[in-house]
Amino acid sequence: MSETAAKKVLLGVSGGIAAYKACEVLRGLQKAGCDVRVMMTEDATRFVGEVTFEALSGHAVATSLYGFKESSIPHIMLSEWADLIVVVPATGNVMAKMVAGLADDLMSATLLAAASPVLVAPAMNVRMWTNPATQANLETLRQRGVQFVMPTEGRLACGDVGTGKLADVDDIVSAALALLEGSAVPQAVVKDEAAKVQTVEVEGTPLGILEALRAAAAASGGAIVVEEPVRDLEGWNFLITAGPTHEAIDPVRFIANASTGKMGYTIARRAAERGAHVTIVSGPVSIPAPDGVEVVRVTSAAEMYDAATSRFGHGVDCAICTAAVADYTPKRPADHKLKKGIERIDVIELVETKDILAALSAAKGSGQVVVGFAAETNDLIAYAQAKLAKKGCDLIVANDVSRADSTFGADTSRISFVSADGVENLDTMPLEQVADAILDRVCTIMVA
Picture 1 (cartoon, rainbow, N blue to C red):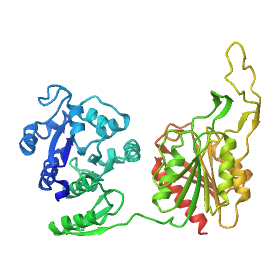
Picture 2 (spheres, rainbow, N blue to C red; picture 1 turned 90 degrees about the vertical axis):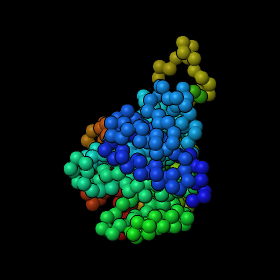
Picture 3 (cartoon, rainbow, N blue to C red; picture 1 turned 60 degrees about the horizontal axis):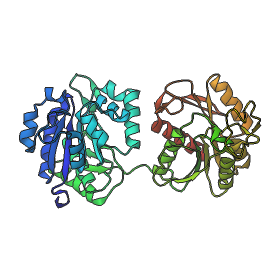
Picture 4 (cartoon, one colour; picture 1 turned 60 degrees about the vertical axis):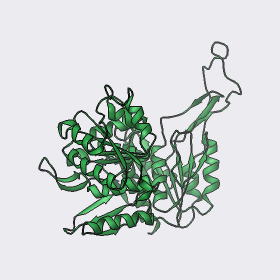
């Protein structure tokens, strides 16, 4: 592939039994014309010696922040050199470090300094892979733009059978080459002669990449089946409120809450990926806007009310009110900064804000669906049922924000669906799975 000639790939090898497979990945990238350097964690050298990678790559192998003969600051030198960083295998520990932004060894420091795309191929025990912490880390890294070649199911080195086996070397190489070409890697399923299925999870379906994958499959005597992303929400319009509201006391002080907007933004992203047209009415958050989603930024509860109600009647099929809207706002906010010791704030007179969920529920026409959220710290279901009856919406998504795995800002959530048909309790799941569960429930309501 001439497009990848002289492309520079930094191969990160971490401490897992699948480390030997990184040698094959290196060779596959070299055959495609790539210049490959290798960095290793200290634990990785217990599985494959650095001299092996040095001989294969033709470059000195970096294993430490200190003593690297080509640079006194190897993590900066390597991160600037690379057009792409590929981590094979990626342990649960490496993924956790990436999420936390740790930089306590060469690999984590290089990944923190990386400006190039990063492709990660995890491999670990099935229980480590399915642990909610690992799944939450996976979702966080995806949201930050990290690409993955997902592990497959099979017999693991420990003897367990399940998901956690390193993806096929050809799949990893194909995904890396696609990224080097500047394309998103398609989601493809390659079936070999034994009908084993291996998945590369990515976005988009450029024809050039599909042809490369088909060629790789044909070369190995297999066949390739391309699974298109699910687009079950095409033609539907979603309005989503997200984040907190800020209620001004004076120009620099306000009343707010702990909402981060993660839930609403994740639902918006998944709805857009599933084909819907999505508008977010968002309070002040630090989350970047999902691709393909219109974002209407507001600050106060009054602004959110006006933005949501004015847009609901314009062809919206479903409104999902995830925002943590302030129930009260200062009656008379000051027009200047109040000075301590001169203008004491002994009492702040509050007035109720307008109820967005109730207003949308009252305004909904035939075929429109309105979903509300109930974030509670006690008596979750009872409060959610009361809210459903009072607001008149179609569904309440209830979550106990006193739980560490379901509170504001968490990467997981444990929700319950409360509707006129009863209560359905779901297990704790990563936010992306929660978002899909909510959208799936919305689909059943809309087609009923």
